[in-house]
Image (cartoon, rainbow, N blue to C red):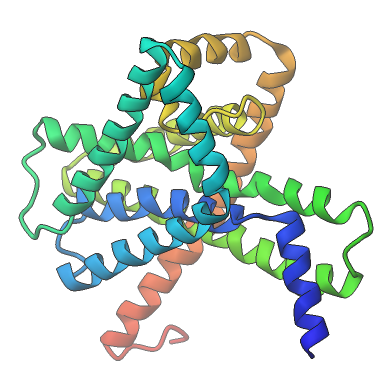
Length: 283
């Protein structure tokens, strides 16, 4: 039994380096922000605080294996970079601070007044949202890690594939619930007609974001750290045939999976409501 566990641990160390936990952390950030921005008070302050603590723990576990590389990169930026590079580092620290402040504000039971801080929270929410469906593309780690044939087949079948499937499902669920929270907010504001255009627009933006993240290796915070670079590369992508084809296919996949999971989520919600009312869904 010990040898089996050692095989699994060794395979994980050779393939993953914490990327699953880190990407799940990035996927859960917009999910929790959506509750604080669009549905405040639905989750009690205690449970929301616990959720933020759990998400922060997931982020720490995810970034811990990468910490030596991250620290070396930051030290190089501080020691060798010019004023512009160091300014980008300060911007990155500011982004982290903004996310932390928004997470604390989301714990408040008071409803938002749609001031500038609320709109800033919406911008952060939209910037981080592509990280949730981005987990779909992480199947590439499974392919790269197992194609060499060094990992036993039983480890791939019984460990890696279920973990990938679970991570992808959690990311998609975070994506669907985040958009549903925004749709519920629009419905309560009397803007139900905007829900479908909003959903399609978000799918399109996330498709572009997924391409920028997977192929051009941009992160959500690059929108603030390097906005001109992101804008220039985005324009290049949108004027090239192959990237546009990939983005269109990604958009179709996102729209299809979102519609399917949306029906499942709404069906489960309706079933729970029937159960509270003592009704049988089969009647």
